[in-house]
Length: 123
Image 1 (cartoon, rainbow, N blue to C red):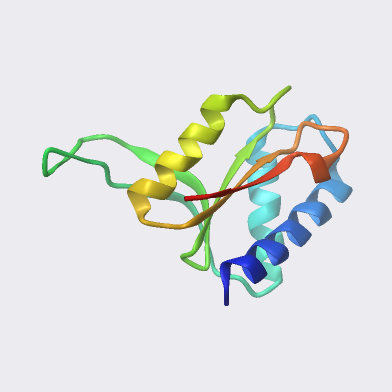
Image 2: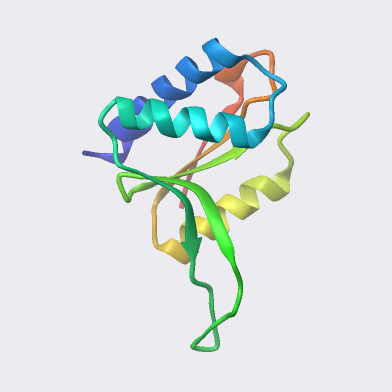
């Protein structure tokens, strides 16, 4: 499946979760609901996927994780914050670079308009 088709399906699942739960909950609640919704729609989802970070050819001894990896193609970074800050975009770009993925979605569920709070990031 192409990343464009995949992000369309992911967005549909995000809309379903937001419609049911609304804004103002903890990020972990949205994550659990979105994982359920994506799997219900037949998508393969890895939750809290550990990232190995290399520096100077050595794996750093850290526990760093991305929120969701869908179909081993699209990283989904979830937030429940008052506003999306530049650092969140930079974080997602770094995840894409480290994992050699091309497309990510940054989602803020703490909003009155979810359509304006899903940002597609391409490396």
